[in-house]
Length: 323
Ligand SMILES: *[C@@H]1O[C@H](CO)[C@@H](O)[C@H](O)[C@H]1NC(C)=O
Ligand SMILES: *[C@@H]1O[C@H](CO)[C@@H](O)[C@H](O)[C@H]1NC(C)=O
Ligand SMILES: *[C@@H]1O[C@H](CO)[C@@H](O)[C@H](O)[C@H]1NC(C)=O
Ligand SMILES: *[C@@H]1O[C@H](CO)[C@@H](O)[C@H](O)[C@H]1NC(C)=O
Ligand SMILES: *[C@@H]1O[C@H](CO)[C@@H](O)[C@H](O)[C@H]1NC(C)=O
Image 1 (cartoon, helix red, strand yellow):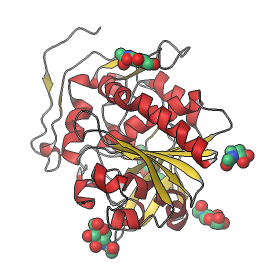
Image 2 (image 1 turned 135 degrees about the horizontal axis):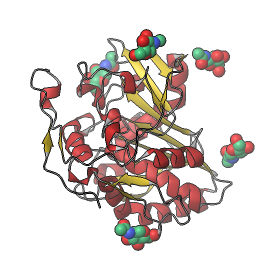
Image 3 (image 1 turned 180 degrees about the horizontal axis):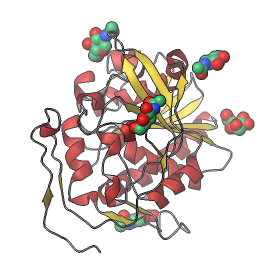
Image 4 (image 1 turned 90 degrees about the horizontal axis):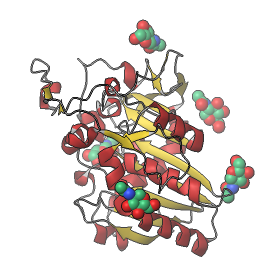
């Protein structure tokens, strides 16, 4: 356990966007020196290619914000309709409180099983990321036997993951059996992205290795230390992608001086046009890249970018799925 020092209150009242952020967190001495930063220039992606690759995941992650009843009956309006026919929800859970909503579906169009978790509204993700549970704790070695003993994860994210882990594993197994498909897409936004990372690891280490797992995340906060980031890379790269949007501060929280580091696989949206379509998007080398989110100036952050729009004018949050 770390010694619990008095609260360090970071207030940056002079900055218009920052003043809205609850950048208040218990201060712990860094548990390790910061991980590496890549200086390799990012590679531009054609927006149309990125949309082809990631839009369906975004559309599923958006549906995770709809109510459980609308998801179960697939009557959530435009967010459900955007996915076309052939989506069968086989399990939906969560209580919209301590246990964020999630669902498991069979997607005929991509011959995949989908797992997606709801995130939190932009206002609350900052308090979750930064609150008391920011403490880095051991990865549960009952859940993940035989892992490197230096892996540390965000305490709050791991607790939230645990509440649905058994249900997700059972639901995915059953959906794979019923459908006969060999692919799983794990996706989510914000807190949902953090939980989805842990889900993807659990599935990867538990299911038949012949099952292909793709992990597509939006607005992913940092979830653990450098050993954690390396563990994610070793298990899920190169099919894990986390898409960060412009000046969203969430991907760079909690801060690296507390020992946090992101996994590889960042794709960074640099600009969005007036129709909400991505106009500039790059693929970032390394775990933290000085020319992607990590390079954003503290003086130029915008929490509105956390919600979106990401690819294809998809934004995330309850107001984008009122049903
Ligand atoms: C976009 O996709 C096309 C067709 O798959 C490919 O030829 C092209 O190189 C891609 N462009 C970029 C910038 O990735
Ligand atoms: C660790 O994982 C096991 C299941 O593998 C679970 O029963 C237990 O509650 C978890 N422990 C914590 C502290 O979350
Ligand atoms: C899984 O991925 C491997 C390697 O890319 C590929 O050969 C195989 O066909 C994929 N399986 C499915 C069910 O897509
Ligand atoms: C983009 O999405 C927003 C929010 O869902 C919507 O209000 C707006 O009309 C969309 N813009 C276009 C050009 O479709
Ligand atoms: C990458 O970041 C460095 C340091 O912030 C900066 O000097 C450089 O201009 C950036 N390069 C690009 C291509 O944005």
